[in-house]
Length: 330
Image (cartoon, rainbow, N blue to C red; front, side, top):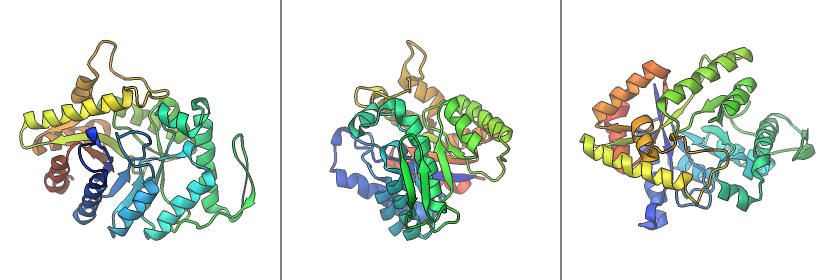
């Protein structure tokens, strides 16, 4: 079973200097490299203190410089907000300079503030995303790229550098909705599953993906399918629950509040229900290390979880994850 970290760069209440947020994250990444984590996946967000990392490719270069074996994942490159040729160049450059350690994750984005300020109409986001992904992959594998699409047109342009990994870095699509899962499966892409769906819904999405993948003639064998889960660990159950509650409140305020005003994403809590409690009951893995390990192993049996992409909700959680969960995973 593989364990990786989804690294956010949250700046809650701006209590500390922002530089210290980056310093702490890079310290964690060095620990991940030495302790057996499979990868760090870097979260890209814009115009919000929820996670202040506008360039996962620049951050990936720093992560690569401080590590020797850790995979460097983009979790995710928000493809509609990039010129596709620039995106192909940046990820390829990261792959070359990291010694071929890039995991490329791409996503459509959901925060209205990002669409508005980058000048991308939300109704165009899916088409832009899919065109950008196709262009990036072709730019990596074709000597001279020609492309005629709805949003982009190129005539025999040479895109350099090419990635070090051949034919290109492994690729994942962030897939939350059924339509996104079906599109990714139909194209043979692996998927990243989100940290906000309930464990039950993750299981349903996994089954849908496997079915559609097989229908399209692709095999699920040998694929890494990271499932992102928020995690809160402490030496007692009440302490872990408090960490989880604070994290859930921060997420609800950030994702579904006035700052993000998500595009095409509704708060999944039932009408009249407490969305914070939904995270505590159905989404966040929280408790003592022994209890959370039991939860992870149960999810392995129930939904086939074999690549856990943890988003630690505190530094203590990260350290307990490293010291008491990672060494005991099968």
